[in-house]
Amino acid sequence: MSARIKQPNRDLQWVRMPTWWASRPEIHETLADAPAGDAIAALKLYLGLCANANRKPTDRLPQTGSVEATLSEWSAFLGLSRPMVIAGLSLLVQLEVIERLQVRPSIYRLVRYEDIGYWTRLPHQHLAVSRASGTLQKLVDMTNRSVTTLHALQLYVYLASIRDRKTLQARVSYTKLTDTRLGGTGPVHPGQPRSGQYAAERL
Image (cartoon, rainbow, N blue to C red; front, top):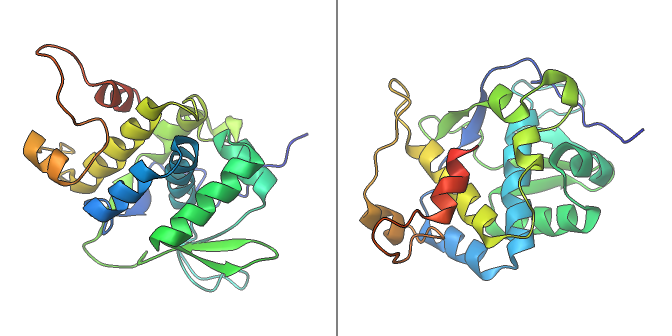
C-alpha cells in the first residue's frame, strides 16, 4: 500500500493560499526557464502544501503554514515521481515561496502564510474530487511533462490570486497577463483557443 500524506484539512471545502508572489513577473520567468517537468512539479507541490498546511500551531508543527511529508507521500498525493518531488521542492525554495524547516522528517512551510490581505481561498474539495482518494485528483490527472500543463497551472494560481472574494470572478486584461509573464499568453490566430487557458478551465 502506498504511503498517504496526513491531511489535516481533508474535510475543508476551502484552504488558504498565499498570493503575494502570484503576480510577480520574475517568478513566472524563472518557472518558464526551468525544465517544464520541474516547474509543473513545483506548482503542483505548492497547491499540495496549501491543501495540507496547518492552520494552528501544534507541538509537531509550531509554525502555521507548515507540512510534514515524505517524498513517497508527496508522490502519491500529487502523482509525481520522487525525482520530480525533489526538483519541485528545490525550485520552490529557490523562488523563496517556501522554506525548509527540517530535513528529517521533511518539513516545509509556506512563506508569508499569515500575511493579511495576501491570500485567497483555494477550492480544496474541488481539486480532491473525492475525500476517499487521499490525493488532489484534479492535479494527478494532469500530465507532468507538457508545457500546456505548466501554462495552465500558472494561469490557475494567478487567476485564483486576483479573484474577487464576493463574486468569485477574476477580471484581467490580456496586457496584464503578458506583463506578468504568464506562459501561454503569446500571439495566437484569431479564434484559436489558448491551450493553457483551456487546460486551466478544467481544474
